[in-house]
Image: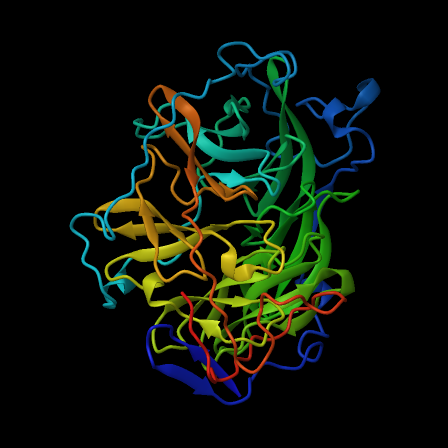
Length: 491
């Protein structure tokens, strides 16, 4: 029996047993070898990659391993920066942090936005990709930017942000502008992975500041039509990508391996999304639609067991249940599902038998809500995690602060120039919002989480999700929801 709970509303949705296959039955057989994308070239990373220059020359003047990529011939240019791009920076490389912009609270809904729960927000964007990607440990960030954003055909180049008490940006241009559809992903060691589309291939390189130039280490390429980078891996040095096929989706290690792109697993069906469920980066959550169609269901893929698949979200048999965010410390999951009858945001707890809850405060009228960050370090206390939301309405974008244990969203004006959708929490409950504005091209505004509301006990005939769990490894279990018997809904 599955069910979901709409908080502050007596309505609920129930369904029969899930239609998901048993783990290992559908996904045991991957695609034929000929159907998989082919690695067009590899580069061994056994030697120190930071000693290879932009021309691909390795230590000692020998040729660096790897293919002759279309981008490998770009000559390095001189970005602002010191001899190493970091330790000895000149004034042009380090942008000092200007006084933080004031971010006063705004009314429950900004001027011009009605309140309530109408469905007119369905016409607004549902998924908003970030313009700045932040490393897993919040040490660095990266984005594509342009020297002249007002130009009809701007010249794009990667830019790495060093986050901390005094954030600063380092440009990483090469001899030729990047395409606007290229992807960048920061690693925890300061290098930036870039994915480029070159003819029928997707190429990968690592960029880093090196004295007066930008260093580049080619990693190889994949010959495939489409490819999507997954969020930064928890280990800070690896990067993964999804490659869709006709009947399955391949998971590829595109950075961090010894020999370039490496096939890791095949998952039957068409997969999208992506969230890491543990600190080791072994369990990957994907939104999957099985071959032949049907609803989209979030599943957990165990990369340490060859891609073994376990159902993760099963709210109703015919509902689309997608995972938006996951916190590895507390197990808090932010989901989007149409099980209540229309698309809504809810929350659940990994490994818990409590129902997924759909708070009314996360369903305002004429406003699109997108979770962007969860407070880490709240072990066994998912209800107390602070969650940052991006709110988009007719009046623009602003920030929402919410806790599952609370019953309302705290609305906060975003700093001018906020890179909407980008942000991260400290363990102490401080939200950091990167922004770029005239006079401060690299800044981070700080917002404190609202005071905690009195905790509320949530019961449903099972142990509360905040109670100490028995010893053992937390495993993803389907959030097949039990009816709310004698419960006190929170949030």
